[in-house]
Length: 100
Ligand SMILES: [Zn+2]
Image 1 (tube, rainbow, N blue to C red):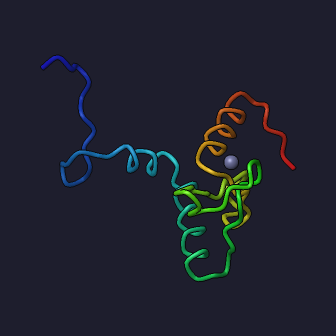
Image 2: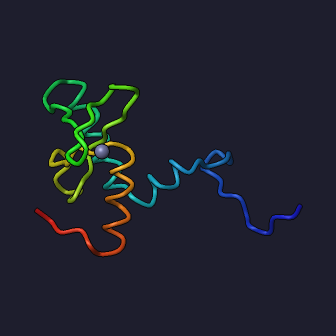
């Protein structure tokens, strides 16, 4: 074995996916994402176009996600396509994101 790092395991002793690890580290974020998904499914929340480029979810396979500025307000989201969502997180990490 070349890897010295211990593999992460879940309670059942299985491998933990990156998604699961993220969810454990960000329980509030996971809850907020779940709330958006179910609200969109129920129709109580309308998925908007990307607020930066205007691409619509499903158009040419585009994925528009709700970006949370505050996970304590799970349904208060900014709609962003995958690439702009990534972009925003880079800006937030750099401390350059200005809350509207
Ligand atoms: Zn976009």
